[in-house]
Length: 394
Image (tube, rainbow, N blue to C red; front, top):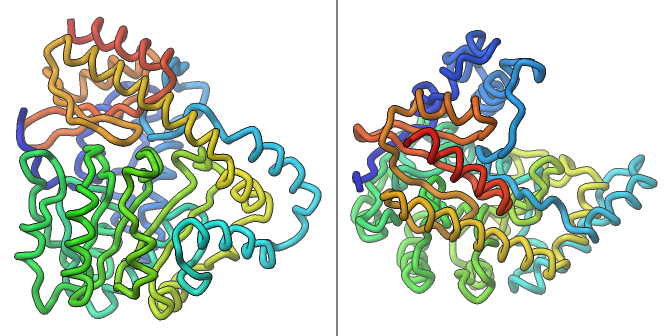
């Protein structure tokens, strides 16, 4: 398999076959939109809005498998749905006092106090706040690539430099290489675990040792959007590290295992002074509706539904990996709800044909190799993906 190298998400979106599907209206997409805004906190949002709304719904193909956005195909939990409906009756109220309920649940599980937490619509606001807060004096953000680019793109907009080392041979964050790159200009170390787009994880013991060594020197930001796809006993206990006073920031979202991608809820954990600093760059919990909050409280407690989604995701993921390997494709082992693998045809042609078949995926070109990143849908959706993939690649 080709070794992964530095990848900027905007670069692969420009080169992506999605932009060449030939669908009516896509020609109106403006690749420079995300670079022309004067407000760094708004550019990526404008880019996404233009990108996904470039064509009216009637011109888009009828999707048989929606596998491009790492969404939970099983929806919100029945208990969250019930709480959401009930909360409509108090939808005229701001969600101020009710945050204590969710904070207690998180505190009991993670071992942290309310002063260690902040809330937001998803985790994106926390990433953006960190980009603004830690790059106000320029400096360098240290990471590995390829990884999730939002925080890095914002940091560059604020004038920071990004120093990225390659992932290791197992497509995981290279912690030793990162430690060797820390210098006086390093403002923050950024890790995504599980990583996006590879789906790989960092060994929990190695991660904890890394944080204990690095955090006294420079803040460590952990983007744990996909952490819930690991069984509870397999996850690093990052809340414990926050409670101990280490300079680590943890960002979590309800968008993935809880299926709140459209409802928008997330939270961060860090030292009280860090939380206060980050809150200066966000609306904090004021940006979360009371209906979403009440659904989130119910969902957080519904471990049965989380287990169901996790298990179904693993089964569909294993099925897909086995099918691809049977066709001679090498798949990077994933611990999330997506997988990345190299393909043997040009990305534009491949993605155009997949979308025309009603199968929505993402493709990327880097290091001279075309790749497909496919989200894990239901078993039926993955069977549609495998069938469509076979027809297209022969």
